Amino acid sequence: YTSFVANVALKKLLESVDDSVQAARLQARAKRSMDDLEGIKLEMLRRAEGGGREE
Image 1 (cartoon, rainbow, N blue to C red):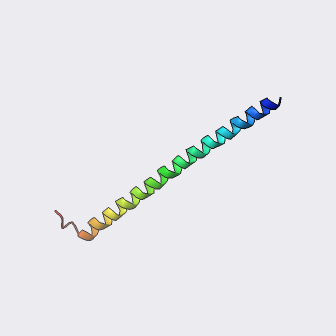
Image 2 (cartoon, rainbow, N blue to C red):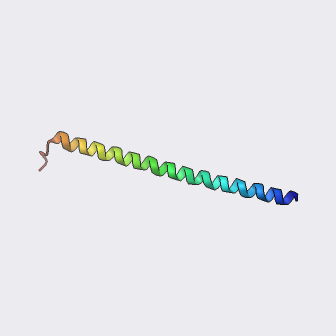
Image 3 (cartoon, one colour):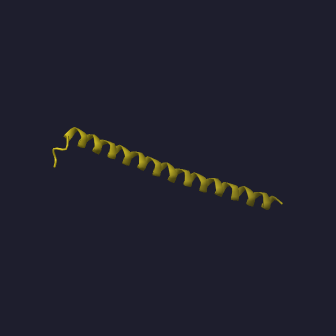
């Protein structure tokens, strides 16, 4: 019985670790997306300020 409880506890622990890894990955991906958006925004601002003189 004790080992059964230990196994269940271990399984739950592993699942929660897996969840945190998953969450960390999602967070990193979200941050990358935000950085990308920031870069795109700056690029558009630069083009707008340039007034299309690059052409």
